[in-house]
Length: 630
Image 1: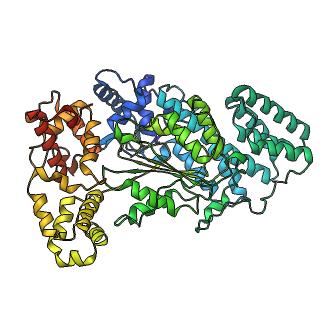
Image 2 (image 1 turned 45 degrees about the horizontal axis):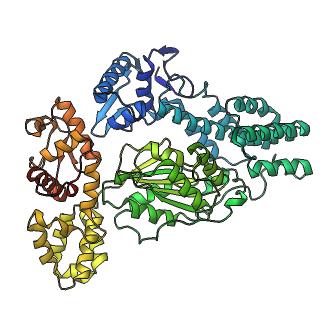
Image 3 (image 1 turned 180 degrees about the vertical axis):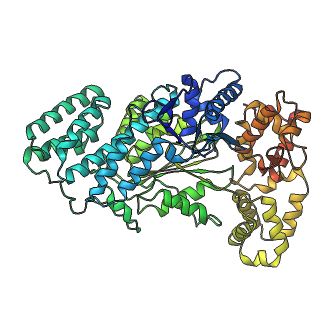
């Protein structure tokens, strides 16, 4: 026997045939947050945001510890596969469930869906696999968990089921069994009456089974419902279907029509199993290309580039999050890859800077209005967010569009901006490791290794200058700690001052803290990036960071309390250190040490923190010159 977790219905745990009591709703909320990504760490801050949203209780972290401890006791009392309990593990990145993804019905469902999409459209096995996937659903997803994050998740999961229903209905109709899906589609529409794709499949299935009059009656019922609820006409695709039935020109879809498969220029045979998207709405017929200017292939990013391109391929998830510290080159990498993927997303590429690192992230209404404008969709920017979301997703309906969301601040900010169309892709760049939308591939963007850093410097200033001063070139790369932004700033300084040798620049940087600005040049300002990240730290984390400015090279949680000035238990210090890692100020030096993980505050970040502490202590600068604690 093994543990089987269910979220496609009531949140539950089965050991064999025995259902385990998981405790109150709030406790199940924490478990649900972990079940979305088995073996993927979820940070404390993410857990707090998912369970309480913007209104966490006082001492929320202690409450998290309490619920995690209770869940651990419940799970430790259950055994499977010869006596192995389910463990909630923890590492520097957060908590995670040590279970295989296939032990969660949601992940089994996704696996079966991917398997079905990889089969030819006319394969008899396709109907069987899709039906097996749909049988995993036991009701409304996440029943019994009613926090705000679960409500958002529930909507996405319902859409995922609808997508599978659409594909199953198409497969059954192609097999000549259109009548078998009618009852299931009617039942699904009771729960999601505005799902136009389900209405379309029901109308097609009614027509295919010889019920033309009922197909027309159902269209009229759907039209009246959409007009009453949304104040608009059905989507152009649904209107065209109605016209084709009236005129007797509806193509027979019991066999795959020629050209129905979506085959991008790049080799991707699995994409041929996907149904063709609907025609784009007339008002959104132009092809937008709103990406910033392309940049040369970022040096040292081949692994990350391949991972992102694989995730954005037609047969993959289509959702990717690039995560990295300030100045690491996330935006340049995202823009470059988006340009390379234009052939896979031929209906356009959108780009939006969400300003998450500024302390004043873009509001949902503003973000939606800007994206609608890029799509060329006429709208009223003063409409409520729900109406704007509907218009945005209608504008994307039936199209292959790539949406690039740069500098994202939180899941809450990007959730309304995620395309509902599975043919659309989304590429998010963020400095927040906790930002992990469901079904998204997370690709970390690490610092450049020394060889890649040296190659980048050579590309920027030319091989002659690095060849003439090889030791100084390597020293400059070491000083930049793998940050492309700092390397580019130093390269621009050297290019603007050709009389400056690498040795002279190295001496200036080594001179002391007063030359921190030397590591910035023009708009390539690492100080500004660090200041922005510092301003967004929670107050206790900011205080601890300043206290660590003179800490030893290797910092351990059990050694911070003596000089940090931050009240609380050692576990609180450990959590604060993890917050500083997520913000990009600390590195994890030794995750598996005997006393727990060790951390380091090095180079330009230590210089920056010392400067901030000095300014705060002396109070000689104006308040506006100081980074404010949040």
